[in-house]
Image (cartoon, rainbow, N blue to C red; front, side):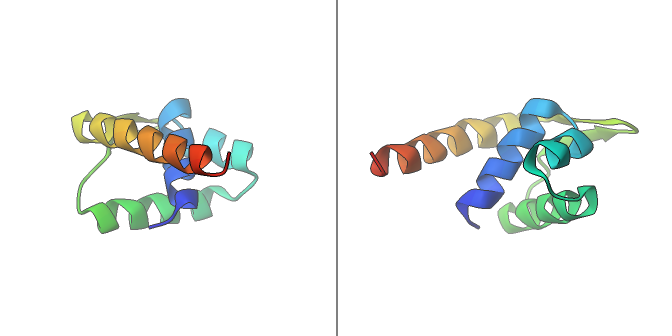
Length: 80
């Protein structure tokens, strides 16, 4: 796991869409989907509930997002 995966997870969570997140990050939607799958496998949890055109954080994902935000803030602060 690396900070890029954490940042991607955060953007997906904020947008509620793999396609929108991929557009913001200038990567392909399949690449974004593969990263999210790998991230979930590494954590051994499901982070999102999926519907045809949207994904929403589930309770586990909400907890993960809090930790991801803290980690990303710590990384940012360490470079100041």
